[in-house]
Structures are given as structure tokens and as C-alpha cells.
Image (cartoon, rainbow, N blue to C red):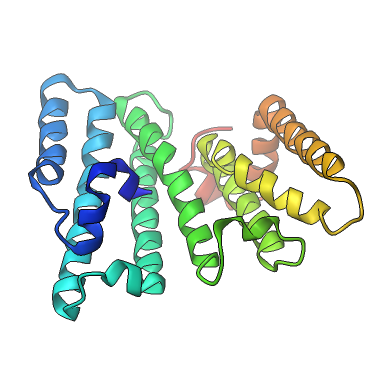
Length: 237
């Protein structure tokens, strides 16, 4: 995901030469822009690009220490773990902004919105990368793949997190993956391809409709199951 931000330099990242002046300057420029104009998106971009810079530095250090210019390609497991750790770090940063403004009356909640918008898919797809180390990204469409039910559970957990912290990004980011996983489950039967596709679209559509129209009632149900100390730090239901 982070490689796609600088597509023209993707080959340089793989060989360890991708930490150029633009990557170093971008978080500084967006940070200065935020200090001058106080645009929440600018601060979010500064944080995100700063994390991407740290990630690039870590990979560069690993390449230097190992003497392997293709370290990213040759060590997919370690790279996947590092990407997941970065996604978790981004989520923690977003949650920090959220918890500092639980009533969402200041620009801190706007910064959190933009960070969550990146953190949610980053978490989901970094987990999917971990699950796909021995196969392709579309393995979850395989009716016999163990990854299919696992992915459904992961998406459900992320949606639950979204309900708890009142951020819909955790729901929308998982819809495509959920649809692919449901399609894989349907393939265990003997129905036609049209039935797989139609059934998948119906289920995803129902989920979107239920969550979209019943977000607040569902959230109140979830919050009642949490300790009062935790609920007191979250946005009110």
C-alpha cells in the first residue's frame, strides 16, 4: 500500500535507493502547511508520510545490515510483520486524536478522521498480506481455503472496532474483502456463478443497509456491553 504512494519510485524502494529528497521533504512541507493554515488533512498527511519515511528508513537499514538489496522481496514474512506494525501504529495515532476529543468539537477529531481513513484499510490489507504469504491475494475466493472464514472474522472484528470508536471507515474498508470472502463461501455449494455473484451482492448490500440505517442503535447495544470506564472515554452513543 505504501509503495503505491510513489509508483514511479517502486523499483528504487525494492533496491534500497528509494529514500529520495521528495520522501524526506513531504512530511516537513505538509507539517509546515498545517502550522500556517491549520488544515487537519495537512497534519494527517504529515503524520502518514512521516510514518512512511520511517518505514523506508527501516527497510534501508535492513538492506544495509543484511547486504541484500532485494531484502523486501526475499523476506516477505518479516516485511509483512513490519507493515502490520506500521498499520497498528497509525491506528494508535488516530485513536489518540480521537480520545483527546471524545465530543468531536475540535480539529483533532478531523485529523483522526483522515488518519482512520488510512489506518482502517492499512490494518485490513496488512493482515491480508500476512495471510497471503503462501499464495495469492485472491485465495479467499477459493472455496477450500482456510483463509476465507478467517478473513470474515477479521472484517467483522474491524467493523466492531468501527462501531465502538464510531468510525465508519472500518466498515467501508472491509466491504470488498468481505464480498470476496462471501463469494468464496458460496463456492462451496453447487450453484452457478451467477448465483454466487448475486448472493454475494445481496448479503453485502444488506450489511451496508443495516449498518447504514441502524448505526447508532447498534452502537448503543455494543457500548452497553463495555465497562463504564471504557465507555466514558469514547464518543457518546
